[in-house]
Image (cartoon, rainbow, N blue to C red):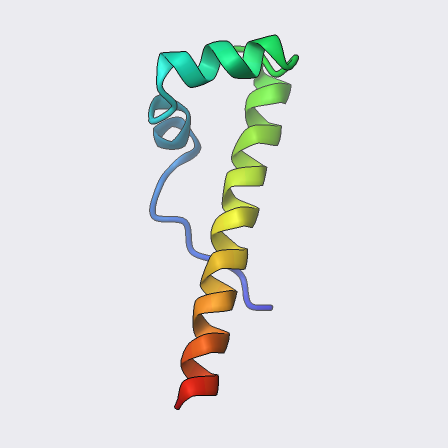
Length: 64
């Protein structure tokens, strides 16, 4: 898999999380104000973006 290019910085990703979602994540033990937790969250968002992009590429190649 080739390295992804990230159009959004980590700060932009974190700023895009609505307060209600931050509250839910906090209840689940993920505090986005904690740098280690924030890094973990951003890595997860980027991994999900990569997986979606790979799926889209695969579908395009398969369908011609």
